[in-house]
Image (cartoon, rainbow, N blue to C red; front, side):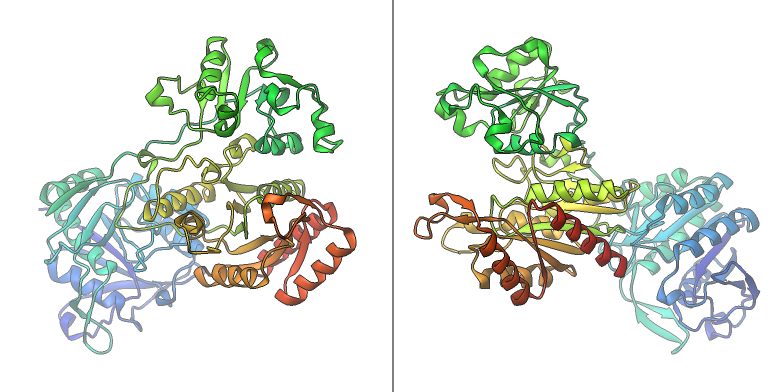
Length: 599
């Protein structure tokens, strides 16, 4: 049987502990600055416990203890990376036990590369997951055996095996008697001790002939008390490249594409509508009263010039299909476009797989069960990037418009912006992820599944080279009434919990109930650790208080707007900005940047 060399990185060892009185304990201190010092102590007790577990089970192993002073308060990424490179270059070892980790890791690639250096040298790394039960690093890396606690593991030699690239094993992390600094023994549990038991078993497998991480895991799989498989995650359909697009119909969701056409990677060549809307022959510049948008004349959808574009973008068709008495309007247009060699972007769910439409030619933003990440003992990612949320008190108050304004201004200033959008057009603007939970939602998950999916989206965005992440919600944030199930803002709550913004800009209306605004602010700040840093006023008021939203809206008068802004600022002790005012958008951007700079 081969003698195994094990390195334990922890808080050190109490060398005069009665349990180790006959041991020759070897180790040194590794400081944050990379200096190595002789001697070994343990002012905390954790390293003593881990050493005790491993030494008791493996009396024949060579064990080197590396003490990180102050590790009980956490370890810096740079220190951990530097230490792992030091071990790879200076300390030969078969197994490394890391009963530590970082749930907030801003330099994952650096830490991963350090672990890869050790893997290439032939060292197997075992790392415990965060005791807060979040996904942590390096345990989550594919080149590390990540260990958590398992309720089925009652004995040190029992393990649960998970066929997964992130969480690999669960071991005995329940309350157990451990050697400690003071007192001599302590009853305690945690993932660190499950990892120590896993290190014992991994070393035993290597002593018997296993050489690599894969071979060690294969032995764990063979002997596990239970084996689980993480179901493969199917990626949502990607958006293909577009050169020239036609839009149909000329509805609300198309206004953003026109108003922010300079943020698109393609040109809008045509706009179509049906004859019943009385828009045919009109200029969109005139209808939208905006000289900055392309001056395109709306044409009849019955006379499409198919040669002038490569992609047709179909908006929501529900009400329009009823108007023209053609229930399959979207599908009929999609099939016609495909027959003519065109690509299709549809905001409604055309159910590509079920209807046999070609997945490389049709894009519909959907979120289904098969898009879910694996359930890894409920563990979630913590986002290391600052997150700004745009939430509101109602629908139709410019939340998506505000996101685009902020995205544009931040990018103009040189910031790299990651973004999760909730409009079906989100990817058309270059956003990273889409969660289409708004009108005619095509999100088919809810509850914990929704939170896990959103958390996975946020992690994918955070892995990119972004300075901050933008997230936008839909409709209101807090239930205004409880008389009907439709009033409950559960999808918005799921989005809030799945994205956990650090700062929020709350969009409000001039006619909002003041107490409702206050309760919404309190709700957001109570449900998360984030802060509502500003209000954004939608500059439209109701034409009739009696008819409410059914009576339509009109622009609020300038003098009334200024008075309302001042009133809101005083009442909620937060700056109030006006949607659509360029100077206000710049000032709001300043506020966002300053908040994150100070926090």
